[in-house]
Length: 351
Image (cartoon, rainbow, N blue to C red; front, top):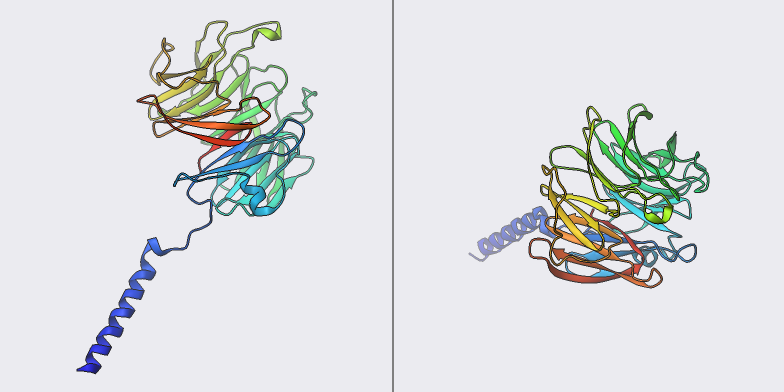
């Protein structure tokens, strides 16, 4: 009888151990930065280093996560970050480099730099290839380009010349849409690059200073143009463009002359943009701009993202000390939390 009990007990232990091994909840975490999102902080202009802030799903906030893990600064200025698979690509503008890290642990893997990474701005990727907008010499209007990077080797394999001031980009099908904002000046084009051929397919005229780009729920490319402000000497109005991704035909809605919108986002059938310290919402089918701003979301935001009905807006403050990130519930207009960031929080990144 005792032998039977011992055998039964051993069998139970083995079965329990087997079930535990198959339980996904027992898997080891991939790293300290697995569950949450990031804010890139530009850092002081032309001196010092930019940083990364991590906000965990559990409410925890970690500052300078790259330096904490690697014992070194990122460099000046941390302009943006892009997550692809288990890696993150941190674009460091004035330091002319892209730092590649493990996105879960923040451990440095390598650095992409050289003549083909010159004042890099934004990074997008698809199917093992990446595309980086570069200003080149910001005082030279004819040396701007998009770098094409093989992500397996982390090397630049192509350099595509574009117009002045390439900034935010989006991949749609076989095309890369590149906003030519104008660098230190103004530009008014969206270049379309065939990513199969790495060549310019067409140039789409838009209004001055195309500052943000997204795809709406109907598949249309949406581009928000800020227009030229009055201090340039020739003020022009902002515009919201809709671009057919197949025919490249455009439709646009103009703002009034003194209105210069920015920070276009799309979420759950609606477009959002920022204007004069207020946030506006419109349906993608609307042919007119909204008359009233959303309640409760006022603020002069430096960067913004919208996700699952929540609005994330950063405040750079005086651009010399810690900034903040505010998170709102859009439908109620209530402030959910205020999070301290690094200096000049400029990019909110959801892996």
